[in-house]
Image (tube, rainbow, N blue to C red; front, side, top):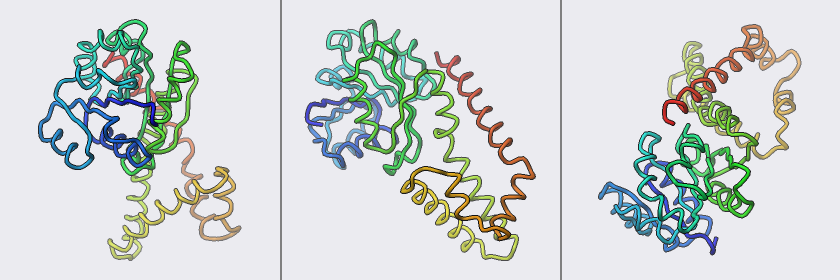
Length: 273
């Protein structure tokens, strides 16, 4: 990462997660400058992570060859538009982690010729275990794509998608996905309590199962059907539970949920853009 000069605009949860991930992966604090409007947040960044932080976004991007846009979607335009001249002059790569904002809108604020890439990370990135979908239009070259992937890999798994519309599905699947697993763990906890377990015992078992299952899947060859089958003894307890879920239309319900999230993501994209 010695070639990377990074600017992060916005030091909220995702901005801080990326900075922390990059520092853990060998990037030096002096390679990172943060544009952040809140004085308390700037002081915290300097004290805890050793990176320079300024309220002047133009100064924050002046030396950067990659700018991460990590502000809320409704504020991206007002943040990027004043930087257009600087970004165009240096042809700085812009990597947006703002959910829903299309390349077309981002490009209109950055100006012609600025390479723009979109990333859709999820909340586990905060603990270095994220899943990120990336999209870049055809005119963005391989070296710029590699820079973006390097940044996002500092907080977890990265996949490229072929179309911008596919990012809406990424948002629905992995972006919103942690909430689905939390909901399942909540339901499992409640069921355990109803069947006689103490609430704390049920909660700890559900969380440990959630965590361990993720590790097991991650360390495997990724064949989810095989992993499920290995846990499911013929005529056993797991089979009884899975048959109940399948009889209730579990697969169809999950499909409908992800379709609803994808549809809502596209509605929000139109609203923000």
